[in-house]
Image (cartoon, rainbow, N blue to C red):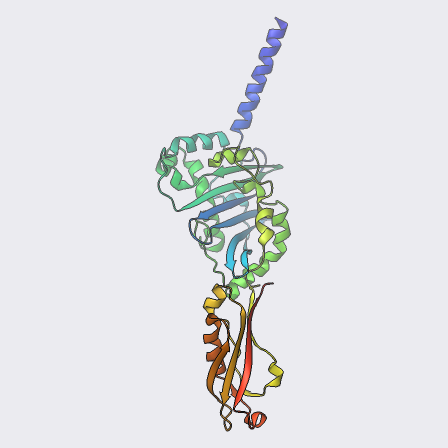
Length: 357
């Protein structure tokens, strides 16, 4: 009888413990110290994917909000991954104020799971991009994560009706960004950074350089849907799927600021042998650059003995995608006639090559 009673108590304890774990909040104890949101976007078209991280952290009486974008770019030297960041400080504002009424320290994961399960479409609508959300909150000394599927995979009006406080989780990143940066651009699936950055985008990338070690170290890994851990099943990815213990470290193996673009050069061989009154540097032909065509173009130039202008150009050798640009640029040159007295023709070689950093 004693053994039966002991077994009953033990099983009851396990059940209660399981229910407690399943019912726990995102972060179950203490005030909200910080939280971050990871927005993962997969596109059906180039660039293929993009990650955004919005980090909200208390600093004294203020709150610091940092935005981080991680984006791939295709270059003539292959794929690179660039990182951008900027930040805003909100005075006399706490992280809980920026949460916009979402109490991250009391939301129960069990309730969110149940609401998502009820609101899921049995047949998914046609979707051309996928967006998932990971929210990691630190309350007191405890940190926990919750992952959310793409809203288009849910009957969202039903979710908002039955569980409005949970539905607000999907709007958390947008609401924080609108308050901190007065806009929500770039946090709902749209790709915002081109391969050729503007000066402002160069500055955003330069600001991100000190963050790279922290990103590689796993600082934000817990917010990613493919990170190894139990929460992966919450975004519809079964635990049997391959996971990555360090998602950002893997992605950042190809890290390079996009302003460190490969150098495409067209150079005049033996330039010191020539004397010019006017010289235009050869530009890399766009189609040749796209096709990664390199090589030399050899030309024979007929020079006006009085003015030094190029009267005629004959192609001796060279790739067809390079010849046209080479012929056009040499026609803009003007030689010093005194240096070429008696020489009606001059042979030149233009070398087009790509140098990857």
